[in-house]
Image 1 (spheres, helix red, strand yellow):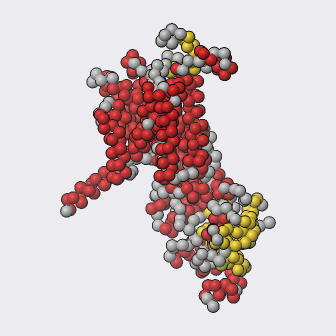
Image 2: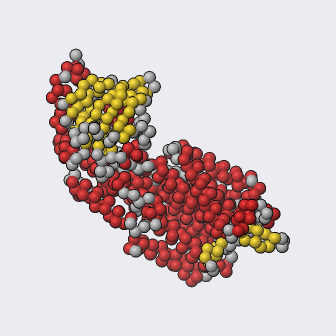
Image 3: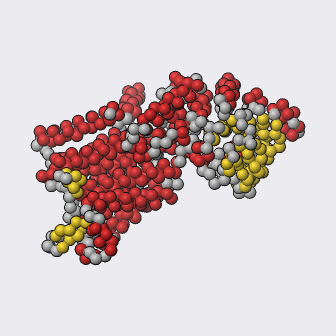
Length: 353
Length: 251
């Protein structure tokens, strides 16, 4: 249990934010805090790929979109017309379908959120596997370009395929009953409960990744980052480890997509956009690359500010600028002690002049 | 049967034959050295043996098993460890962590077991740490355990690299120019280390430029020139071999 003590500050912070919002009468902030939590789920997964295994992905908005779009499509697209088709009958027999009435009162038959979630996440993992096998042989900017290409393809598919709703995306996504009485859904009545659901999921995610990076596997990943050749010579199956890490982060991204889509009640093509991927990379960089905590804190903070509209129409530009500034001045992230030293040195140099 | 058998190994880079039908064997428990002038193909030969490069023709048998089609990490898990000419420390990791990575093939916690911190992973992790500390201690590096490995002195990094290789519990250790970049004192220290490792029961094959080191510690020597074996034998015989003398000292 002592290993989990690191979670205490996070639990306290989560409760503190709630109390602070309640005290200042700004409970509506919890909506954006909930959405930020789900984005952070993606960011911490990407952090393991980038910071620990040392691989870059400019396509993670694609995995988020795969999760979100498939969950949305499966739970809203009416299968009533296909009721007699064998696959639909089999799904029904397995209890994976739920029937009801659509807004016009017609018969509606859709996949249950749990089944849709599992299918969406498996799809993301499978696509990560198929993309990862050829693409992870690349390094540096070649890998960045290849993953960027993947992200663009997913974006175009979301935009072009009628099943995914084109430019409108998919709306009317039903709540996701995680456990009896615990549903992921928007609306002010469920705000506080959903804030805690989201952050409980983040706590779970952080715990799993924290365990991973402090294990034999985590060491092997850092070794790959340090010297792939040497890691190979020591018996680390570098190709397989990079692939599994990539798939793991795709699963985190897809889960984030599934949860946020149920919370928002829909998803649109902007979630699959390339600028979203750039934003996630920028957040991991600001957080200090190999720092789950940094990624979590910066992911929550920046997404919260962005969702509150603080950056206005310059939203994407802000994240672009952050990426440039971080690469130039604080490649170790801004939560590192190094940056304080560097600033101090900068100041003292001024004084000497 | 020899531990390592290299049989008519050949590797071409375009029109250049870097390693040309090289054959030799390494018996268990010896220190064998491969020497030769710059560009003789020594490092290529090492890369072929450890499967970092695939040969154009020929075979390598290790511990009675043909390495044809094996990947470097598979060869490593069979008990063949190697070090690099330009020491490849894992940067951003401490000396201890570097050695702990060396235990990779002798432990088994995978992605899921690690993420869920299954109960059996904890004793394994503790064993990895204890073994690694013991190895650092054995090589006289105990005080440096928590120092960042890439920031250590060159000679110390070399020793950490040895410890990391030993953590794999290898039967054969390939050393690519272990004395490169070291001064004479450090070289002598590395020589003592190598014989100590041999005495632990690890067979050693090394590539080296430093003649005094090679002559002092090797049981057998293979001389390469332009990718070909021109002489093989114990150090005294090699020192008197007219071909070897001609290559090293000129006509």
